[in-house]
Image (cartoon, rainbow, N blue to C red; front, side, top):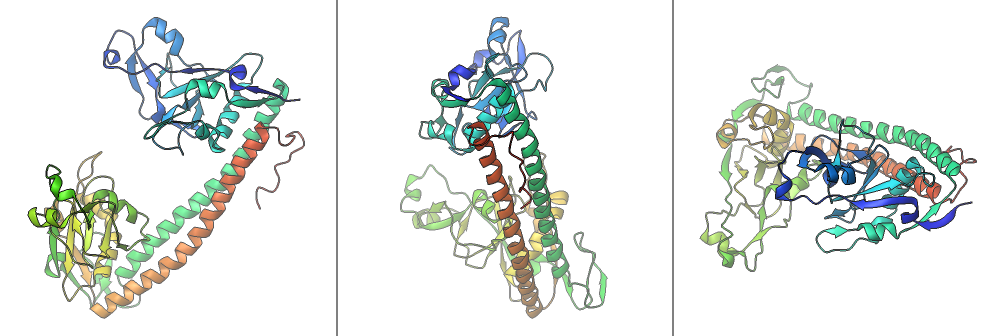
Length: 432
């Protein structure tokens, strides 16, 4: 029989050591984990920092295999309380910061693997989020976690529950992984289809192309430098030191953050932005209002190489380049050319390891295939039809993946709260 208790009775819950400038150097530097290292069910150890912990502090804040680490604070309710288990992945002493809580199972009372699954349940079900407080940063606090109610079955039952969840979640994860691979294949097919169509397909005689991202183009097409058929422009970021420019702002202003909306390639047009600038700011700065139909491309940051078409008259930041198409070039054909060549742009032109930048002089030398305007519009229509079909298939697969994730979470919560007897549960039906 399970007994209703609280987390305090099942685990020792403690907050990590606060980071401070005086701890950045010293004779006892050791690795420590922080909230950035903890994902839901996994540790990310790609970026582990060091801090000075005295020998006495190491006794207090060191980790042992089986400790459950919980994110104590986050800017999002959806991520506060994410947990993972420390299994001694790094050699030597490893400590933890006060952005994490350490839940250490009490010997003879709680099985470590059961505590791990209980924490996963508390995160996925929203139990941790329900006790979070704060405005911009949400905190769950050690005291509030200690006071949370908890169903604690006998140790042998805890181990059966952990064994069951270990096995069943692996089964579900295999299906989720297979669906994720299927989505990756759809994305590859989508881009391959775009490249195939903007290159003219295989329906007419072709000649070798001089463009790095194309192998051939139809003999009836031209290859031109983009500057001959479209006027290139650049954006400008007005000064924030002129507060009067940022009052009564109504003009959409495209920044690198806005371009991230177009990352899934489903959105062709950007029709609104979070950032706005005032009419006065536009007139009194070097910023320019670009007309609807202008093609734009982000050349810096995480959105480097991403492109779209303005659905409204918009201004752009200095990290955005634009093209106003002439009569020989349909803006949406140019958009799909830019999206087809994006890997080439990033691989050949983007500079920098952590902060990718595509420089304007390189963009000025871009070349594109150029069929007639009527052919361009037919190609754009074919791309839209192809993408619509692939999007419909992708949506179905995403929904299947969501349902499996929901089933996984429901299974975890039902098992650790004693809603069913795991010794009699088969887990069958996952496939359906």
